[in-house]
Image (tube, rainbow, N blue to C red):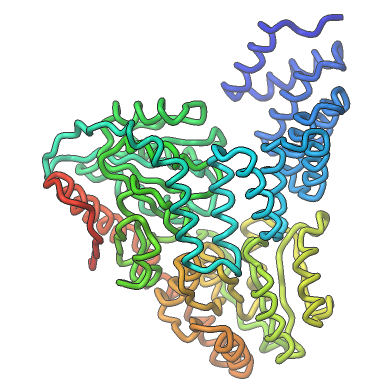
Length: 560
């Protein structure tokens, strides 16, 4: 019996695009009962489950069984397993795809992503490098490489700068001849069209910092806000964000030239990139310079490398004056605070320092697993050796054994497994409640924690951190300084270990910090959303006036 005709498949795809998932599932189940060998049907069903965060593995495996010799099917199956947090299974699927087709760059790139997510950043770098040798035009893979290098404890600032500039050489220099003169009217005081491009307009760490300031920008008569969503994934956060934009465009199906033309037609005056070199970014579109002023903010704590990106927004703690300027192709805008943070309304109350009752100190790290480098493990091991009763709480998926490489590093340092408390991934409420068990959070290096540091501070738990020599190493330090806890910010590894030992001997002091920290947070600039919006508007106006006067971009300091 012949499978469903193309016209019927197109109708199913339309149901998917219009998010009529229940009806789509009903029709697919009926059709697959008649056509159990219908590969496309199983894949549409799998996609339908994935987008709803349902278990898509069985449907994807049925599709794979119908075409076991096709490397694309193994690659697709790997993507499904990755979406279900089965990273080891995903790696095996990508490896099988590569065995069938050794030069399959998509599978090699995906394998690099999975290895990176498992904490093996070095192997991720090796796979991304291999892809670029096979296909130098693979821009998103180059971004993956840069992301990994920024998390690599063996890459120095000069190496990172050189590699980000190479991204521009590969993907910006060839399209500079396509730059068009901007027709935006050079009126210094007029209302401005502000565009935001991101693949993370949803429940995402980015939204914790972007959403608080957005209403205050939207209510300004001086600004008209436009969103360019690079992902079709939407949730309750997306719905809230949409209410603040004059125009919302979903752009995932547009190529760079098409998107650049739309941005020109929308007459965007200042275009902001919120992703940097993270997943789903559209930096190759920014390389076409569709807006007269282009700015990178929030999503990536490093330069984009592009000359088409005029400015990068930070603050005086993230990028102190005259300290990191030579690591950026952009001119730096320094706000009083990089962005406000949106704490959870229903967060549990702060409790008494658990060490006062437990008789031992509980350290924790809630940062992404790929931020836990071997040098970080060496530092933590030094602390655990000096404080024999201390324990370390980590969060992760226990079933997938994703922390295997990290525990191997600890074993090399002579640290036994009984020093660790492993907790599974949890809801936001349960994750926040875990802080009731924690006395001090330990930051990672070179990639620092930002969202996790804010959550911990809100729960009364300070984060011990090193203020590094690159912006990505300064996130936690910036948060601690904003809440006036500079004693938890050190400049080197020796001081990091020494301060950890100091605080374990001064539990009353640590409890006092704990009881005051939420109020410190509330009183800091981290919760002043209206003030942050005002600083952003001032920055927008300053850089707009420079463009109107035909002046080159110049670093900006906003003090109010």
